[in-house]
Image (tube, rainbow, N blue to C red; front, side, top):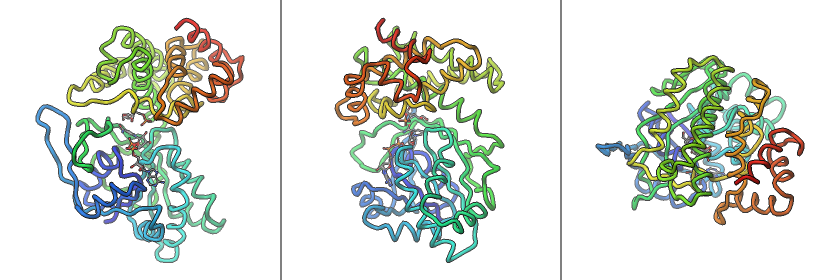
Length: 381
Ligand SMILES: NC(=O)c1ccc[n+]([C@@H]2O[C@H](COP(=O)([O-])OP(=O)(O)OC[C@H]3O[C@@H](n4cnc5c(N)ncnc54)[C@H](O)[C@@H]3O)[C@@H](O)[C@H]2O)c1
Ligand SMILES: O=P(O)(O)OC[C@@H](O)[C@@H](O)[C@H](O)[C@H](O)CO
């Protein structure tokens, strides 16, 4: 069985590749990073190191790699022959890989009537649905009809902390042992892929929103507050009283709205939150605040980890979550010259001011109550 995975990065090698390998797939990685591609092509395997007391390892072999920049035809052929396609490239890259997937499907329809599932494993709501919309832009109406019949784009939620790697070996990847991969089953076409570790659910939304607005909202809060107070890693930032007080307040607010909206059992959600804070404190993982805070414009977007839960909170309780607003305020002060989105954010705020800059990024009116509260929080920092 062949799985084609776009994005041979942290999660691609450290999580998706590992589970697909265990399920018996040969994994063809598609990437644009020639160093990683060359290493996979020459070595044909890599190590996953589980960052815990015993530092257990797993060897992933039966792998290959294709450079989608220099070898698009090979990518198309791989998609045409694949039994499963997955992605972990970053939400902003989905429109880029959509063209290669579309060309591969065009070729596939000339070769076989076999169904195929394409699962985007990105930190966003509706990643596979967004990818499907992007693929549709590159195919004919007739091919859109074939896709609707034969190709599933089930949305998914993936959870495993995989920091930027500091290994001498460019392919080895240290990961936390914990993982969760939830996939929405009704959108599957043909047989449900038998991948141990995937949890199939009828409705993904509660799960992706619980994950994004607990794990990622908490993570990003620690990253931006950590950067603001001068800490380098998530672990050391979380040890700071002012950072812990903020993330605790944020998780209380997102927890309250998630429990009310989706009916999660309150004690169970508290345990879920506690587990996440323990994961952030993992002594065997060093995760920079600059990785977790990467892409601040994406993370301040209307449907992402700060604004979406804040709007849901206002909808449900008719008041603004002040801790989330404070977390947004420190995010607006985020600086990192090596992160283009951080540079763009800083320039936008300098040119337009906080109210106009944040309102534009969050797709809100400048006089929106959340914008007003965020500006108030910035002024009090
Ligand atoms: N790292 C984590 O802890 C984690 C956990 C859960 C979800 N995620 C999500 O997984 C996705 C990937 O995150 P990551 O941490 O693995 O990032 P990463 O930067 O380590 O990996 C992304 C990979 O995509 C590749 N890429 C970029 N453009 C490409 C293109 N046009 N075609 C093919 N490959 C391309 C990059 O070269 C890189 O190897 C993101 O959506 C992220 O939010 C990450
Ligand atoms: O990947 P991002 O940039 O959306 O968010 C950074 C981290 O919060 C994220 O990668 C977490 O490590 C991951 O979502 C844990 O499952």
